[in-house]
Structure formats: structure tokens, C-alpha cells
Image 1: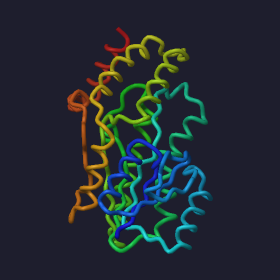
Image 2: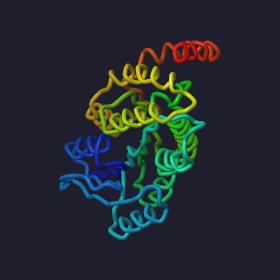
Image 3: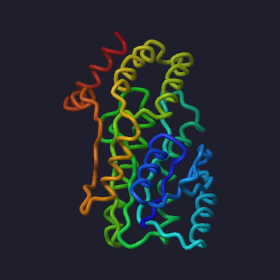
Image 4: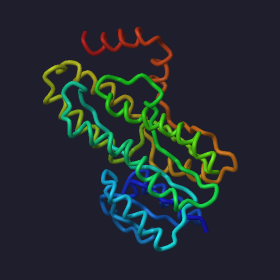
Length: 264
């Protein structure tokens, strides 16, 4: 029986992935700061992924129990909508901590627990390879950095016999979308630099998120990746056609269009 470690297991894509892998016959261990509801089907370890000592202690606990992992699935993440010039330092650091540093810490701490030919899946975003939209900058920056980290890690871990795979999902119907709506509404109320642009940005965000898919679609993809003999390096799902068309244009044209939409 194969065993997977999943971060962000308490809800959304993490919980859906855990339930799908369990149906596939996997044993699942999950890390999250928030305790999930009704998790009798998998092992849960309450862990603050922004705390290096907490991540290390979780790894040491599982190592003492003799647990070995055939896959590590990174689903933990936070979404932030804000102005790069108005964000608080604490919010800036938190997004980097969860979206980037947490993956680095988990991979380093759990490396000794990987079985032969293990697979590591890192969840980036459809925004990672694209030019960021206004007020999504911090999220796009961290996800782009995560994707670059994943590529570098893939180069290194192939020498150890392990595979690193990136997921680039579009909008997914999880708690993150509810949080993003709340953050956008707060931003519209509090911004002093972009009051007009923030309100217009709400329309764009609503249009992008209207194409959201259920987290079970992501879980199905995770299942296929872990079952594939030769998985690809990057998997994309539910990419927004408007964003793709926008990014076919030169950056100068993109900026001009955004300026016209948000300022006129």
C-alpha cells in the first residue's frame, strides 16, 4: 500500500485529494494548522507550516513511527488581493511563508522519509507563468517563485531518483475564493491609492472566478498523476481563456489595456 503526505488537508483541494487517494487505496497523512472535520480515514498532524520547528517535529514523529512516503502533495496556500504599495509587512510575509517557504520546509524535512522513486506535487496557479493583474501581485509573485523553485527542485531531485511535478489550476471552488472575495471587498473599502480601479477590478475577478471548478476535479488529476508511469513536468487545468488571450499580447499593450479598463 502506498502512502502520501498532503499539506492543506483540512479543506478544499487538500481534503478532496486525500479522499480520492484513500479511495484509490492509498494511506494518507495530512498536515494543516486547522483541524479538519471527520478525518477518521487519514492520519492528521496539526502543524503550522510557517514554523520550521513544527514542520521538523512532524517529520521526526512520523520517522519514529517508520512511515515512508511515495508522494508528497502540496495543497496548502493562501490568496491575497491587495495593492503592493499598501500591503502591511505582516501580510506580505504571511503569503510568502505559506505559498513558498512552507513547501521548501516540508520537502527538506521529509526528504529522509521518501520511498524510492517518490513524487512531489506542488500546486502553483494559472497565474504563475502569466503577467499578473493589478492587485493580484503578491499572489502571482509567490506562485511564480514556487514554480521556479519546483523546476530547480526537479533538476536536483531527479539525481536522487524522485520526480517533481507542478499543477497549474485555474479558479477552484474552495474556501480560498470566499476569502478572496472578502479581501477584495476590504481592499475596495480601504485603498487610498486606487478606489476607482479597485471597484472595476471586482468585475474582472468575478468574471475569472465564475469559471471555477470543484476541488474534486483537482483530486482526480492528482490521482492520474500519481498513477502515471511517466508524468509530465507541468499539468494545467481550467485555464481562463481571457487571461490566456491577454497574455498573447506584448506587455506594453497589456498594461495599456488594463490602464484603460481600470482608469477610464
